[in-house]
Length: 396
Ligand SMILES: Nc1nc2c(ncn2[C@@H]2O[C@H](COP(=O)(O)OP(=O)(O)OP(=O)(O)O)[C@@H](O)[C@H]2O)c(=O)[nH]1
Ligand SMILES: [Mg+2]
Image (cartoon, rainbow, N blue to C red; front, side):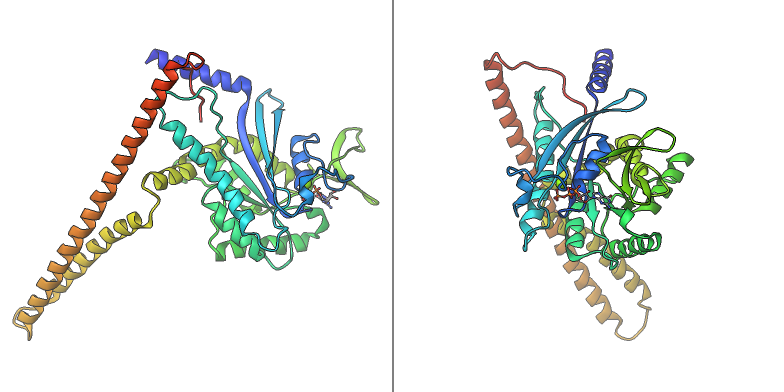
């Protein structure tokens, strides 16, 4: 037990030294300011913004969407390191038919879950395994003044059950305060109308402390976050260097909370809610994926579960009906007969559902057995190969 605690503490220390791993995906149509936002978030040029001379090798100029991964090491004022992986999606939404693009993003996210699932089922973990799960996805909404567009509704609905989707309105400096409020309102109404389950800074009134509840309640009110980005820094009146956009009338300091939600969003992503986003990904989103994958992700199982519920409900109805049948009333025998028949039918149905559940459970056991056998075979092969040795696994 002591050894287990020691090794887990050691692993934690190691991962802190390496930096807390966090993966962020940025999705939005061309020119919405993704690159500028990424650079602003990291405080350095991580991606080349499209305003600069186009690189002939730049894939984003093609119609087909690409997924570009950048790794950045960040360190906060307290010396905490973050090993940030950013996935940019140049070319998103540029095709006439975006279905393939949507599938590409979804496949990528699901593939990361598949990899973890496989890794978890191994007897001996791969010491070099890298958890590539996407912990947050920033979706850049184009503020049209008419709420969400069809493309926004489709992709956000598809992604929200797989990943923590955080909607943002970029270039918010181009909107007046009233326009921004109207856009936020309409977007929120649409998200509610279409039932899009975005990451809403969840909290538990019984479990969370007051500070967390207040912070999360406030963050919720800001959705969709209005952000301003810039690739340049300027000297402010007090001589300090600020990241800002320069206009003829002056500077728009992107970190000024009066002018945009950028700094609040950055703090939430990289400081206050980093762990929460990771935990939510692991405990809720991945867990849902895992359960569905292991149960064969079939609707039949759900149907079977629903059927159990239906049987229980039907039984209740029959019970209440038989209770309401008064003694001596007309047609008493006929009704009793009818109830008997209904009960009989229900029993048959119940048996069918139980059989169905047993069948599913057996399939699951068979699948687990197959995985174990595969694992044993791999272990044997690995033991024969001297190059691979056991090492501690990484924390998720
Ligand atoms: N006004 C304003 N302009 C911005 C902002 N962010 C980016 N831009 C400008 O918008 C243009 C596109 O910005 P990018 O960051 O290259 O946008 P992108 O989404 O990465 O574009 P692609 O990679 O071509 O899809 C550039 O001219 C930026 O200077 C912002 O917050 N406000
Ligand atoms: Mg770009």
